Length: 320
Image: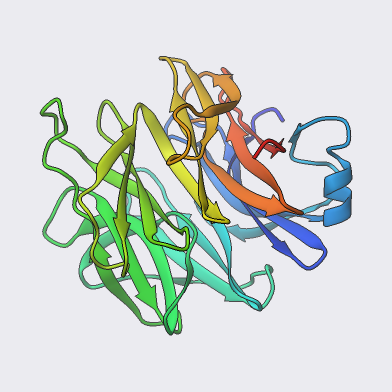
């Protein structure tokens, strides 16, 4: 769609429907990912969704559902939807304008339909950005984020805990190495946690050259092993686990103006599967989400183009 910037899709299944939350704005040279963003939701009947893949494994965001705006502000930038329990869903959103402090917000509901939200702030944290899928743990819920602690200037992964969504605590932070193998400073930001039934694994984005995905493991979500580099150059990790296997999608930085959405089982495979390449600014694509529907893996992502007008795409991965 001309002069439209669609990005950051996430997906959740509920009863006989699928809900795709995403952010849509307008391209703007003043700010990465554009401006005038809105959080939108695309609803589609599951049977209709599955039938759309009868003739191919890749489709743009489908035309057979209902699409509507959920939240509007000066500029919405994120949308992360997740199921926390049988009748509990959350939507994580963020408002952001360049050179201004953004607001990280949470909404919760018995169904994947959201009307209200409130900002999340912690006394130890200067600012934070939610990233990755939250999940139920102990008496409450674990949320992953990244941000800057008070008195510091460099971002790091954060593990947050809440029981009732109104009171939040910083469960732990994950510190990276001071330098990588080339002696260069390592800066961490985006992170996501999965549980494969044996341990929790956190996948972390290195946001300093040469970029890359790191990982750390934990048995209690508080004490983590020293992070190790998984591969580079890459951004935007998204992970899920099923039947003891971990699946990781990410932005694969192939060249100066060529990137790909890729998928790997990181502890079972040596080489990732390229889902789709795109040209142009690498930041205009690459974020993704993973969902199993009737035992088949689907990857939803946004892909860039030289015009800087990305769109939302869904890929079926029957080999996984």
